Image (cartoon, rainbow, N blue to C red):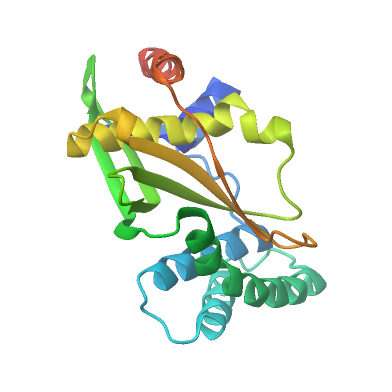
Length: 230
């Protein structure tokens, strides 16, 4: 069964030729750097924290970050100062993750972490939508909250927070998560959680990204257009 992810959709929207090279011809492209290593390590740390699987989150982050750095291409010239800063910044951030969730959502229960979506796309019988939802929690009002962790430096400005292709990721996650579990879209809300390395305050910022019926319709139109052309 063929599939398309949001990452592939975003590449196609930016440049269909690049999509062909990367996803069809399998030409090697971007191979990662310090920032991707940091992001992967932080995602893993967030996952383990919310599942209460680790006793020392700072040590866990350090181990994961060093592991991700070692997995980078050997010919990549790394910025040692940046890596040193990131090691300190990651240890600082882990102290804010669970308190930020509690402050924003108060009482909540864990539904899933890194939940895989592999759902059929209407009109394209041979294609599924593939994705991994970072975190889903449920509050006492029976609302489901989809949360996507994003690492960054100082944060996102208003334009970035409302940028169409950025928010379409959560729009599509919401749509296909609802289909997978037969949950009414009105009972699902979506959020980005920014893990900000260099901010002076509010280092873990959780903000809602709304996805109404019209926005969902537009996101699905883009997905269908991409698949038709691919």
